[in-house]
Length: 107
Image (tube, rainbow, N blue to C red; front, side):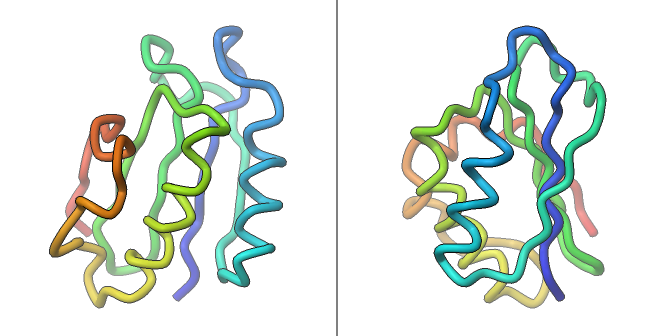
């Protein structure tokens, strides 16, 4: 099941171009993931909010993302895709992305 990444595009403090850069990186990595944009995800105090979800898996919400986080997001997507339930056994490979997790929502 391919992951769906939903990126907030309405926050004035958000980072323009993040969705495009992320989509390019996901495609270059050969990952099966869909990138969607939406208006307001209520993460305004942590702009450039990204939700990651897939059917039957735990969902994740990240905030304060920049283009520098894209390689870690690609790593996260690889690890996430390899799990049956979306729960990562070891988040250390995600580096600073671990500190940008706002929520983990059981699937």
